[in-house]
Length: 416
Ligand code: EPZ
Image (cartoon, rainbow, N blue to C red; front, top):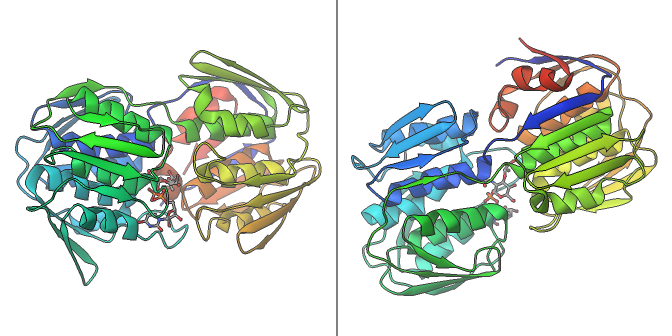
C-alpha cells in the first residue's frame, strides 16, 4: 500500500496552493445527480475519496469525465438507485447519496457506509430525518432500502448538528411539494457551499451556516458550473506544519475566516500570522509554546479534523497541553505512533495530556486514519532523522500526493 520516507528537521519555506475541499466536493458530487443536465466542478483535488465517489456515480449510470482538476458529471443516463456495495463500504459520504437519489428517483438503496475508523459513526440521524419526510426506510442485513414515493415536506429537529445528516436532508427536500424546515443543523462552511451550489442549480434553500435551514421545493434543477470552497482542513494541516517545523509558509486560495478557530489557537508567542484576502502567511518565531487546552467542537469551534495535527504540534511545544475530542469516540489512535517518535502523550477516554518535548526523532510508524496519518507526516517533517510512514493509503484519501507537493516547500519526502 506504499509508504512515505521523510528526512525531517527542515523548515517549511515558500507557498502551497489549496485545492477544493474534500468534504464539499464529495457532497456536491452527490448533489450533481439532482439534475440530468451537465454539472462541472472546478478545483477538484486528485484524492482517493473523490475517485471512489466518481466510481459510485459511474456505477449508477452517470458519465464522469476528469481533466486535471475539472470534473464533469452527466447523469442523464442515471439508471439505478442502488449504490454499489464495495466503493460505498470505503466511503462515508456514499450515504449522502440517499437524499439525492430519493429526490431524483424516489428510491435509494445503500450499504452501511465505511470511512475512517475514528468511531461508531452511526447514521441514525440521517435515517430518522428521512422517516420524518415520509420516506419508508428498511434496514436489513446491513442494507438500507428507502422508498420516497410518499415523501412530504416536514419540520425536522436533528438530534445533533450532524454535517452529513444536514446535507443528506437538504438534498432529500429539494423537490418536495412545499417548505421543509431543518433545525439544529450543522453550520460548517461545506453546508453553506452546498446551499450555494443547490441554489445555483435553481433550488430555494435558505439559512445554511445557521442552525435552521429551510428548503422550498421546486420542480427541477438545471446544470451548473461551480467552484467548491478551498479545503480548510488541508490548509490548517500545513499552517500547523509551519509552526511545528519552523519556516515561513504562504497558503494560497484559502478563506481565513474558515480557519479562525485554529488561528486563534496558534500561539502568538511563536508565530506571526498574516491573513490577507485569499491567502495566509505563517512565519515561525521559534519553538511554539504549548496551548493549555483545545476542545474539538462543532463549527465554528475547533474542528475535529485538525485534532490529530494539533496533538502533533503540542507534542513538540514548550509546556503541557490538554486536548479533548468531543466529536468522535476513538480519534487519538495516531498518538501511539507519535510516542514511537519520542512524544509524551497520555490518552484517557476522550482526553489526551501532551507533555511537549524539545524534539521528536525519526521512526517507522503506521498511519491509522486520514488525519492521524497527516499528523504523522507533520511529525516526521519536524523530527530529526529519517521516518517511514506505512499504510499511506489512508492519507491519500484526503491529501494529494505529498511526495509531489511538500518538496515545493522544502520537505525531503519520497513515496515508495
Ligand atoms: C463529516 O463527517 C466529515 N466527512 C468528517 O470529516 C468530519 O470529521 C465530520 O463531518 C465532523 O465535522 C465528510 O464530510 C465526508 P457528523 P460526518 O455526522 O458527516 C454523530 C475527514 O477527516 N452522528 O457531523 O460523518 C457522529 O458519530 C472526515 O475529512 C450520529 O450519532 O460527521 C459524530 O459523533 C472525518 N448519528 C458526530 O455525530 C448520525 O446519524 C458528528 O458526525 C450522524 C452522526
